[in-house]
Image: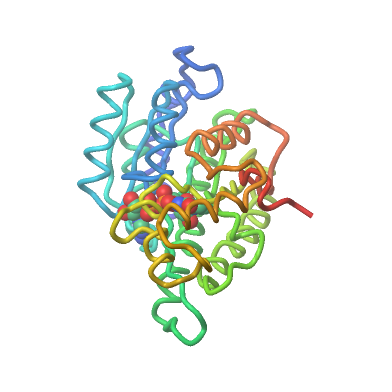
Length: 297
Ligand SMILES: NC(=O)c1ccc[n+]([C@@H]2O[C@H](COP(=O)([O-])OP(=O)(O)OC[C@H]3O[C@@H](n4cnc5c(N)ncnc54)[C@H](O)[C@@H]3O)[C@@H](O)[C@H]2O)c1
């Protein structure tokens, strides 16, 4: 056993991780880490599970954002929430994030690897540096989160051989089909599905399920809707949508691509995350939440 694992094994508190308050039979008192939780999908997932009675570590590179968000959730839902500074592309910081969570809560049940970045661009435009940065966060970041979370989960499984744990990657519909002039992101997300399947095979004997959730476009989130630098504005200015004269035209074009007629919402993704936690017989899967825009073959 290495020194990190030795120290962490002393912090696991059997009584705390196995207690149940009964607020939500599946989720209550489970201990979560959600990365990228200062805003967007990460914040929405942390909020939903805090409301169900989970104990949540909200981790983000944006330390102020993570700490403020944790404070809001703790007071709104009377739930134990903490905010942590962590860059998921940095191994030392991920080890620290997991250790701080176990020190505070006494264990870890669910790792939601949500932090992600996107840098669109053609082969002509994108630099090797841009490509590496996207992969460092989306691909390597998921590996590091799974590595340190699974170490804790294996120790807990040693205390209770029936206990199940979850590692969940918030992937994308771009992890299921290519994305024009967006290959750095799509490649990192396709890679995430490869990691999900491989980790699932390796960790199944330890009762650790590993699944990816693949949302469609969160059209109401800041990435798309920010009035100055959101994708609607950028695509309008770049003339990406033929004939579009306003931001609303661009939005209508993206909505028209979805059979169910609207963008993905945080609550759609929360339902999928809850499903994979609740379902004890699902691992190594990529669950599309795309309103029918991308279907599995
Ligand atoms: N927005 C969409 O339409 C959409 C669609 C499908 C999938 N996704 C995926 O959902 C996840 C969240 O996306 P979002 O739209 O909520 O993004 P967002 O940009 O609104 O939020 C991302 C959060 O991650 C944090 N972050 C960025 N790099 C980090 C790092 N290295 N370490 C720790 N934190 C970091 C940011 O500070 C931010 O708080 C991403 O993995 C993304 O690929 C998003």
